[in-house]
Amino acid sequence: KNINLTIPRGMKLLLRGPNGAGKSTLLKALRGNVPSMIQEGGRIENDRLKLGVFTQDLAQELDPDSRAVDLVTSHARTGADGDVTVSDEMARNVMGRLGLGGEKPLRKVSALSGGE
Image (cartoon, rainbow, N blue to C red):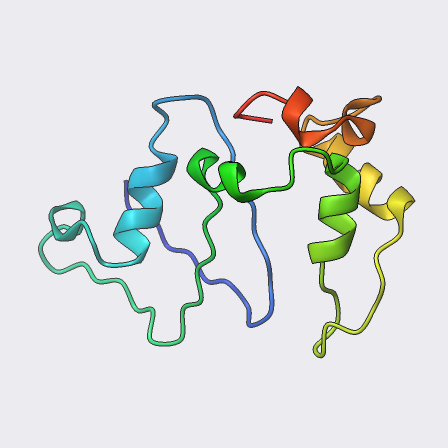
């Protein structure tokens, strides 16, 4: 209700929450796919919005024999030109903060649940 959100250019965000919390609906609204979510007089300004969404369906396209941490490090980009390498340690640190701590990053993708 009455959300004002400004995301600085280049900032990356993760949207996380329990099932049914409205994550997908919020993303659809940000893309302009749920006009009924915008109250009269409200608006979403997203002229330059770049929105990347990774759903459980997309996990089917991952190499099931790859370790989770290897997928993160191979796809992670930092810096304006995406030219900085992300180490296993950096990836595991971030994965831990997202609930994939311990040995989970070292597991094969096929051994993780859809939500993981």
